[in-house]
Length: 268
Image 1 (cartoon, rainbow, N blue to C red):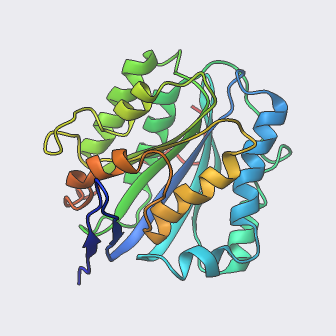
Image 2 (image 1 turned 120 degrees about the vertical axis):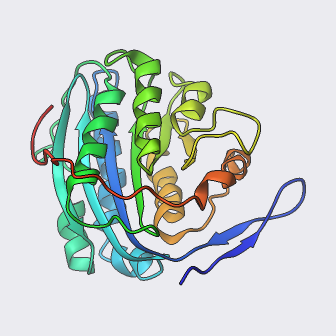
């Protein structure tokens, strides 16, 4: 059964949104390229670790989720892509702690190198389509990218947007956190599918993006992002307008999964 509570907000109104779906597959995709310093990379890892391994992630996020199940996995990308943590169904605080504590420089050393966003999107998409669970019309597949700059490998910005467009055609949403001053909102807008001002001609399923001025702010921004993705509450930051623009894509039925080999636990 599909439940929906929607109060639209624009020009002085406010919006809240809830829906019910069975399974969320959330691919956490981290930028480990050389433009990020070691201290910034540590702050990025700490943001994920502090939230997911908080000791109450299941209680705070999963128990309050609009989904019956939430599956997480993690990738790191730079010139290439590495699968860091395999798909995990978060069914307890203990399982969340085990997953979240892997976000450290020993288990997940920084790759360094260039920024190949398209390869990261392709790797996560392939894994989602071939992991053997989900696929119902009410399930959601989301690629959650954190990055500090425009891609300079894998076709650059156009290649990344093309990869995200292909994923969207398969029912996979791309959401993004952009960190710092070296990543433009024009790229983030295109990457999440908000290509047009017309609500009815944006890509579907449409995502959203948030921004953080520095990696010191990353953890708080990530918390807002995961709240929107898992619990279903709309974040308050600067792109609430962008999120409103994307409403046309949120409730479109997801494409069923294809029989695609997953390629988990490998580097690309």
